[in-house]
Amino acid sequence: MKPKKLYVGIDPDLRKLSAAIVSEDKKPYAVFLRRNKGSKDDQAVANAAYLACRLVEDVIAYLLSEAELFDTMCKVVTVVESQSMMHTKHMREKGQKVKYDDILHTGQVAGCLMGAFSNISQPMCLVQPITWKGTLPKDAAHNFVAHRRYYNTLGITAVDDLATCIHPDPSQTEWLCKFSEDKINPGDFADINDSLGLALYGAKKGL
Image (cartoon, rainbow, N blue to C red; front, side, top):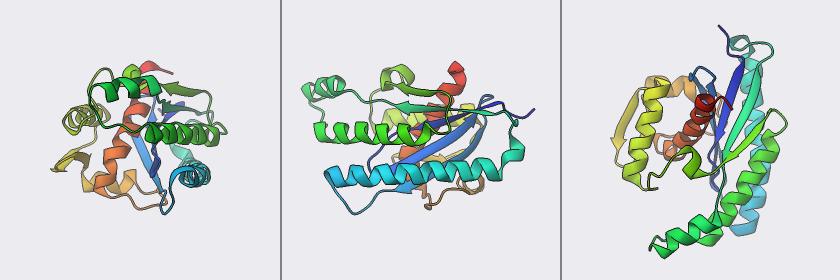
């Protein structure tokens, strides 16, 4: 049976703009990446706005090229991670080295991505990390645990030969990354895995 609903997960990042597609029955279809290089601060955010539009074009190209995989009335729901300055304040008070400017820029990039993907989405969902991830700390060890859970649920064979990053087995990477404009390396999944997780969260909740 062809999926009638697809979830696009987006974990916003200033340097690596990524998106992942998961169906309503928790099947992974594709991941995408656009790299934002060579600029800083406000100009980097401005460049991210341009790249957000290119990223959604990559997703549209995929959906059109693979249209036979999906129901003709298939809907797209986009799930984006939100940011919180108050949470950042609490993290700093606990001694974690989190920069306010980094969170500000990530929030701005999230807005750029939501604007770009609003053209293909019904609806858009903006969720706080604690809502979709729970209370797991944001460190490499706990990310490792969370990412392995995503892979197990999605049926992706995990390779964890990198110290801080789980990534798909190369035989699965080939079809997952086929439509990404920028080449995706194993280490890039440190960021892309959360985009997969957000799409999976949308599918689990039936957003």
